[in-house]
Length: 598
Image (tube, rainbow, N blue to C red; front, side, top):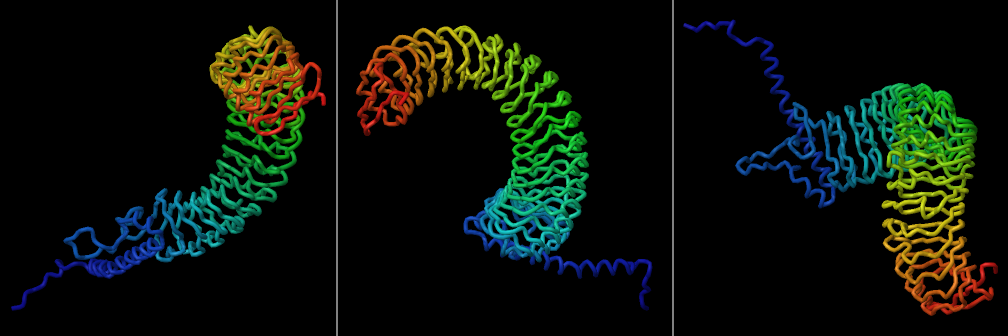
């Protein structure tokens, strides 16, 4: 008798459908995986031999000698990641020294590829237009390679892109006009290429964009006001291009912006008042342009600002007192403009300021004594202005000051005691003022000092031997003062002195023969003093000398033959007591030595 079948124990129809669908799907999965593997192997074959040898895992042969079946999946290969179905979704080979092109890369073979990172390699050639076949691509980084040619317009078909970096290549041409189609883009970096033309207005449609880096190209034309529509933008770098025209006032809409760099362009017109709306801004640079008009007082509302660079423009008028509200500033640079009036005393509020550049303006009045309270100050440059009065008393209070320049002003008075004790000084320029004091008493020992210029002031006294205790000193200039006494025999010994200028003083005595120990000296200027005696023959040992000025002294006419060793000498000024021109035979030819008035 036939056995009855219990229908309740049979699998459901759904199970049979799933079962047969899965097995029907497996061959297609394997086939797709094999296609991707073959496509990668074809690309590998186009690399140089050295690059191919660095990819041993890229093979369809089994690593297991007992397994006769070859692998058909690239999912275990170096730099390759797959999804659960075994299809390639990511290629990451950053800094692997790949040497080849993308010409043999079969973009159409990777329907699920979402991320490509090939940065920091040696890939070259064009970026193929077939890249548009990667419809699921969200991340593309081809930075720091040698790609050339134009950015293919087809790249704008990758509408799922969120990250696009093509930086540090040799790309030329313009930014594709349809770049605005990449509506999910959050990070766009094209800097350090050779791109030219204008920024497409469509770029203003990228409402999700947070980072835009276009610097160091040859982009030109006006900056499109549509960039003001990028409400989510955090960082904007458009510096080091050739943009012209005004800064768009629409930039005032970028309320989330933290960094705005537009320096080193040809921008003109005023700084928009609306820039003061960018309350999140921490770094702002409009330097090296042709901007004119006043500094907007509205900038004083940018309380988060740590860096403000407006140097090398044509800005005029006074510095707004409101800038004193920027208490988070660490770097303020307003040099090379036409700013006038006094420096606001409120600058003393910059308790975190490290760099202050106000040089080459028309600023006047006294240097605010409040600047002496800036304990973190590393560099202070206020030279080439019209400042009067005294130096602030507490400069270098925090012991951090390294570079201090107040040259070419109308300052008077003595050197503050705080500067005498400022052992952190590296560069020190006081030249071209009317400062007074005893040069032997008002300056200390500076272990880090490399350059000091005290020329053309009213210092008096004798030259101290302390300069020989500044071991890193390279350049010492004390010309045009009222220095008296003799040149110390040990001056500069123990230093790395390359330039010594003691000209136009009241020095007396003989030129010390110990100067022969300044073996690194390139410029030695002792002219216009009251030195007497002969030129010591030991001077001939200074074979690196390029400039030697001994004119307008009371030196004898006898010139040592050892001076013929000066193979690098470019200028030699010497004037005898009889003001007669001389000819002197150097070892490498005829040198004419003339009075300086000829």
